[in-house]
Length: 305
Image (tube, rainbow, N blue to C red; front, side, top):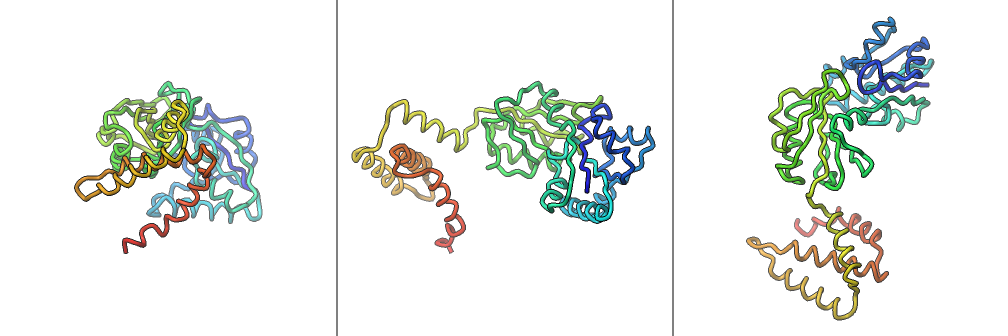
């Protein structure tokens, strides 16, 4: 069995009694990384451990590192119980733990304090209305401007630069972001900057993240929600006349599409309106519509070839 233990997000003061008990149980201790302030507890109490930091230097991608860590842990645990310590808590932003779970081996999860709590404290925000949790390789369709968003794994300036460009496709470049480094630790740094300024900072490290407050930016869910509200408020319904008007407008706008002038926003709005009206009348099921569209995506480009 593998005891998977959270070290907490900051220093040794975050260690739980259960974590301390396990690290002293005479099993072999493994740390994904020893770049964590709680390491002082191991040293002060002369607790032996093996760190996997050397793999980060030997391998050229995080995925390879994580796969090797999991391979070693499984091999080490075949004939005896071992302890595996990770920063924060095991089930928040710990890919090696996710991989261990997927292997369906015998593990025992011991929670710690995640880095989310000190990040929220650093920016003075409450997550009660929804918090989106992403890492730095998220694409623009993963974001939701209705939710505060924490973006992890912003290790360096290059990642911050790529992230800034991605964010500017979703948010206004003047929208604010918080860059938090070493959240909850004595040398915590919190900076409020504009999204386009993210690449201007030079001191990102393995404990840096970006916090984006919700904004006025629009996305498809917001559009659908507003359209549904308008339909209900105005008591709109689908009859032959309304269907004919919407159909004629879609055809008219479609005929005006060209390489120089596009009318896609009108076509999309009208199509969504028709779909929502049909859904309200019980003529279609939105879930089935989404599923049908998704199934067609692999074939959608065939006619261009």
